[in-house]
Image (cartoon, helix red, strand yellow):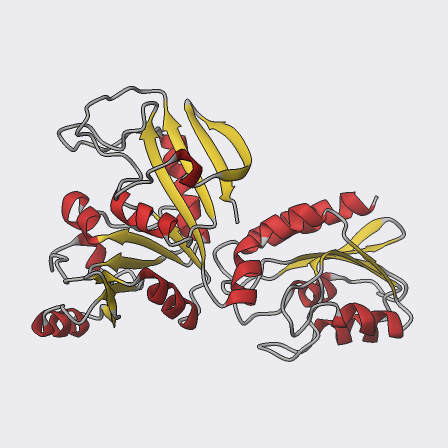
Length: 362
């Protein structure tokens, strides 16, 4: 029975996708006499937490009720008061928790407080699912660095474009819809300047009622054309260019005058130091980055150990050509023992295309 109600809480938590960053997605369900009497989720950053919304949703007395929550209730004052205090005040008899909050400000403290108040606490129901739901938050809250998902779409023989450079569209519509869901979920999307010059992408999100991610261009010498579609911020989205001191000062001013954010970082081998970039993005409260290449930038992130997860979309097409681009290029690795190994692999079909998802081995 606990798993049934926690599953419902997880379903509710997912409703907050793309709306609560850098906070976690959280769902809550209130049960009395084996009947749901209140539901809620964290709806937007700065708004009520899931527990409070569930309490407000209930029209019955909460005394003696059980609340199921995907993440340990907060113990500290942030944008809102501590949820744990409200749970105690309303006379709940039991709290069922999916995941202990990794935030050091919470991390078990709410559980202790609930127990001291005489409330029964059960922890770890559907824990794996709850942890995966907030994998972006879990990393960000502990490291203050964004979670990085490397996404690539390619043919069966590993090509992201033909020898003439044609790349639209290798994968089908269902796979592309899934990518736009990622753009809604992640705070930022990142590409290199070569992708901007070659493809002139917008990097926007086409999910109904979704949000556009912060668009980040890694451009060490500021070669981004001023008429690039990615620089269009008329739809209230942000665009940020990471460059170095080698960038022309007049172009920096032109971009800033148009509302483009320019980060000037130290260089490493005449390129943007991507480790410094990731640290700076963390300071800007960007909790997750969808890395969409191209091949040189993808390899740089892998080589630097900055990729947490990969999603490769494979279309049932063979393109060929030794000059055709691949999703990971750069200098490559010299020995198979140095390969970037993937763990916890899962697969699923999206139409005719195959999605392979996995995590970088630590």
